[in-house]
Image (cartoon, rainbow, N blue to C red):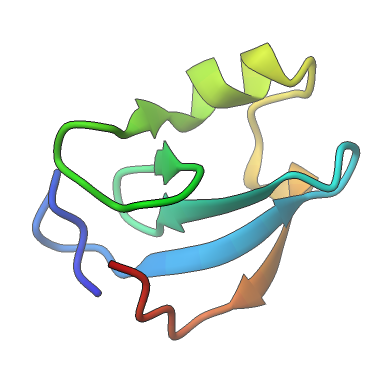
Length: 71
């Protein structure tokens, strides 16, 4: 699935290593969703990670699916 925010990046499934929280993230613009991918519900990686009390770096994520078909 292509990101509805940037129209370029692929949406990946990932897990925050320190909390175990499952997320969906755009590989290009770093927009994050917790469930449904929508152009109205995403948040930035830095804001999301701040809410989790984790540094806002990709190294804090474990990619669990690189070919996400989530809608």
